[in-house]
Image (tube, rainbow, N blue to C red; front, side, top):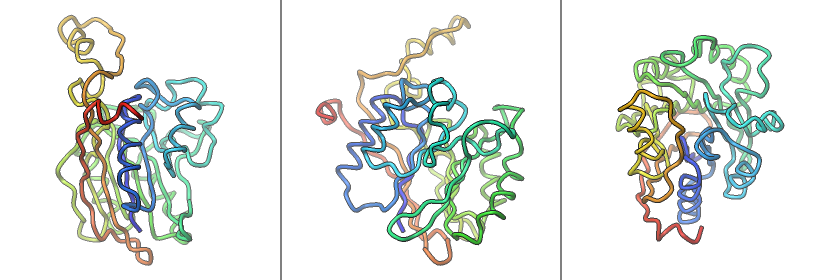
Length: 265
């Protein structure tokens, strides 16, 4: 089974890039999993954007620390195909993992968030994975993990920790794609960060002048999505054996698109 996983999509440019790639590559993948925490105006997700992404064909949506930025998300956070990090403390609304079925094949997606430079109130993503794995291991061997984290050391340590149990571990959050895609020794596909989809001539998707002003002055700034530049689409295409859950192939997908190519979307 072929999975296309897409990291942080940044506002309207990221959504357009996703739509363009999905339309332009029919049959290239069976399942589409997308991190949506920056999909609505660069911060969070709302119901309108959720419906737009479903219309594109997104099967499962993952997220991270920005999942709560749009307050209306609380109205639909329990939707089965919308995940928030599973290692939030008990009592936080929403779900951190799910088991899904596509073309008669069951697969699981787990959403976790790192703690280094992130949120100290989170539970350990390592022990959280252990608990979830014991709950789902008998239901499907295909297990994908969106590890939303800042530190590459935490990401790589986690990848090796779950090697042979998860089918695919892919990092999100830093918006910059890494070139370390690999199949680990026990069969887990791994990459430290998928990268963002959005305007590439920007400060990780945001208007660069706003970010530069903050670095120059140290004063708080309101960040807005860059929408007037050309766009990059980043993803990972992974092929996973349906019986063993092992990753057979993992490759980066990167496509640069002009505003002219996307204007009709």
